[in-house]
Each structure stands twice: as structure tokens, then as C-alpha cells.
Length: 195
Image (cartoon, rainbow, N blue to C red; front, side, top):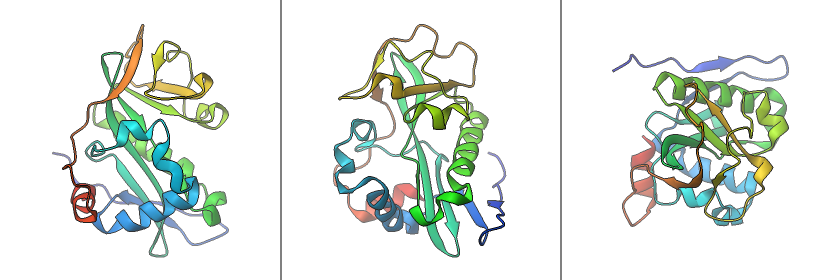
């Protein structure tokens, strides 16, 4: 077991600093409100949501950005099988619209990827804007033969490898493999898994 890490603090010249820390049980309502604000209440029907429904995020890989006591950013990673290979799916990444110029999204990405690598994960996959995620090392180079359980734009299916060759020759459906949440998804159950 590793020692607990101190929250990462990012200082900006424009505003108060923010801290990135592990998601806590008390963050659930704020996280859900932030996701609704960023993606709309119909976000539950999106293709990648099918990989998260009924599953807990990967241990230690649910992060929150907090500024002046308010949750202003979130990112989570989830266990999947990508054509039979163990990987993680990242998402959603969300930042409060009022804080988008502060570098919170980039800080969340860097910390999430560093934590995934440190925990020994070989690859991370996401569905997102290629120009934005390229700066973190994501490409569509090895995802061309992978599919998602629903409609998606092929050029938005991206991946990064931490172990060379982790996604070589992968093909087939990306399916969830993470720990299942109890059937009844009450707020109390969600809070327990966020802790």
C-alpha cells in the first residue's frame, strides 16, 4: 500500500488555487450536478455511459478538482476489456464552465494518467476530441478495429499506452469489466463507492 498523496495544488494568476484530490462520498451530488451542467441531463444515453452504468470506477482513479470549497472538476477511469485486453476508459472529464480558463482539465488529465500508470495499468481509452487529447499522448493509431456498444465517431476513439504494445492488434468490442454496483443505485450506494 502506498502512502496517501497530498492534493495537487495548481496556482493561477487569475484566481484562487484549486486542489485535485480523490473523490469523496460527499462529492456525489456536486459531481452529478456538474456533469449535468456540462453535458446535459441526457448524458446518461451516451455510448460511453454504457461502459459505466452499474459499475464502480477503478480504485483510486476517481478524481475531483476543488476550488474555494466547491467541486469544479471531475474525471474518472473505469475497467474495461478492449478486444480481450485489460484497459481503462477515461471519462467523463468535466470542468465548471466558469473555471475553464484555469487549467483544471489539463491538471485532472495529467494526475489521472499518472495515477493510472503508477497503479500498473497498461492502456487508457477515451472517446473525445482528438486535437485536445493529443497533447496528453492520445491517438487513434491502435483503436481502428475496436468498437463501442452504441454509435460513435471512429476518429474520436483514442488511446494511450503505458506499456509498449499493450493495444497491438486489438479488435472487437470494448466491454465493462469493473466491479458492479448494487442493483439499486441509491445516492447512499453511490456515495459509498465514491469514498
